[in-house]
Image 1 (cartoon, one colour):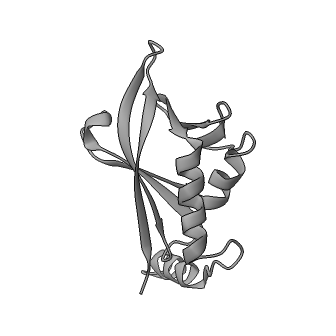
Image 2 (image 1 turned 30 degrees about the horizontal axis):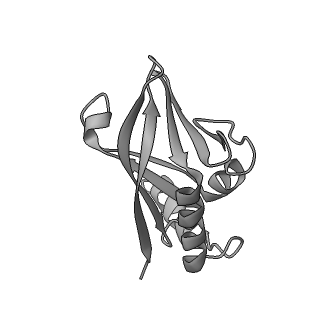
Length: 137
């Protein structure tokens, strides 16, 4: 049975006017998807009024806490000694969100109590993905 961790935390969305808008974010990790982390934003923050979940590699979060990381739609880097900047990129633009680094470290370490880095089993997810791809073949 999968284990899911959730950690509510606060963050600040940087607006184009260089203001900071406080926003609650739920950090989620599941042993059912051991290589990923999920950042869940409330519906009121999105353009379409729907809850938004960004899913990306747990290794990216780990790397980005110490050094700039990311090539695709998620970029993470230290903002200063106590904050981490996460950029979520879409065709509509970039959402820059500042988190307390301590909260992100805490979440990451909690995820390690469920699945140690390097001990992730990807076989069930791979089999499920292959089955869905080959479903009508």
